[in-house]
Image (spheres, one colour):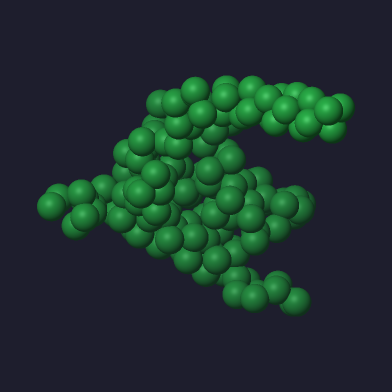
Length: 142
């Protein structure tokens, strides 16, 4: 008899502990199937965004640039690249080449490319990402 009572109590306890899990509505997001699609937010912050958010977004594109200051020059290659990305994003210029014109075109030993070429590459990537974000997806149009 004791074994039967213990089994009933244990079964009732387990059943009661599972009830809240079945009683609550599902916690699955409504757009679960569209997780691979881009959101409506732009890939980069707009011109009116805070300097902190701009710096983080453009800094990701310029992370391969040197942050060491060279005496006799204004700013670092990294800061010049971030400024160039901001110019491209705010459409002050449409050309990565023009935006990065303040970068050095001298090769630095041990690095791939020049600060100018790496900046132009990052600018082209920024423009491509921006264009992809503006282009409507074929799946959402249907």
